[in-house]
Image 1 (cartoon, one colour):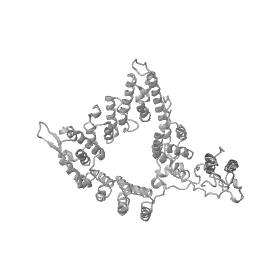
Image 2: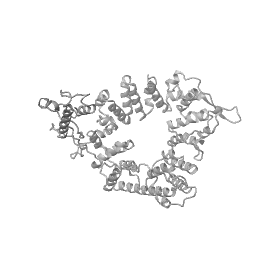
Image 3: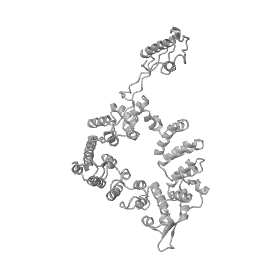
Length: 580
């Protein structure tokens, strides 16, 4: 009774002995667990024969369940897989992909990783490079690639882009890969040509939400006005949660032409819709909402000349009126936050940054940020300016609010945390961003720099790479706990330019351990540097393999059926009575 095959095929009750008619395996198990005295068999048997009858029924059911499948009507053959017009991978790159996909362990689970590279952590970088070159995925690698993407959501965008149209074809045949359909625009459904007005209108009126959202995204990227008009045509009848999702699509191609529609959305009955519309309008410096916010904020923030030197004086709003709420100001503050400071922050955050030089005596941004703020309002005002700089992508204000990299963590004029500094850095050009973080590492070391390194472009620019290597060397020589730098080491393996390999080779020897060093630290550092060097060399080889005879990126062509379909996933036989 240990065998548990998939299901029991149906039988003819008229030809089955009464003691064998209990055919459902689950019922048999229930009878056995409860006992035939508490759960008698359905077909009248004496108390003495009931256990024997149960065993007979179980034996018959077991034989039936092992007997195989009854022939069924042949299913329709799948349509051929679509053609992938992109060029094939070079042979060496294809072998490298197979090697990366075969290493599914993700490194040692706990303990020391040793000196071997973590191949799964190099897969995202390999996929990004392969997509940049415009290669197609080898058909035989698609199942393993989809399995890897299924287990790691961070892999999915690049993996599905590399897998191409055949990933969707396979996903329709294997439920384990349905995530690919959910990730594809419209759930993998074919979208009409934007020029086909009737097909566009019909899909917008009759399609599922995913299809409509995908259609709106495609139209917004190509013809923003058409997408906006389509949304406006059904806006009043959409559900609140759908209005919110559709409204978010207007971030693509946002322009002054969207202002009338967004102004109308400020009167929406949903608070979340109103807040999103207000956020979008505040991203248009010349919008009427931005002007209204500037007027309100200017009343609250002014220049005070009464003291010995100029200073900024702040008078926070006394109330949140209906006009402020309509323009996206949330009236109720979060727990632990004062109402007036909460309202002030929202007003300043939504005000165009170009308002302040004229309001504060024609000063430059750096001069404004350097002004003292009276009555303890500096932190609140500068934090709001930080959020405004991030929202508006203003590099001048971001640079001024970041301050010098040598300042302590909370020493920037407006950045009170490393997380906020990381957001401000994103508004700078990659080279300037890397130089600033390199200066921060030189002044403070690596222990505080992990979040900042995460926003720097890959591979790291030479000044940043040198700063990281130098800081690691200093930490090693100082006898620091090496495990404290495992996160930075992992980032370096993926982000350091392979050109730094020569500088690292001098760090491979086990150093003489200081008396105050962590036990075994020298061996760990040597092992970690060996792994770093090996990984950098491997990344250089990967880049060379993908660059060999790299093709020009092909033009996107409509997918056509292939005469040689990719191998479908192996079907799992289903018993004829699986549903029962």
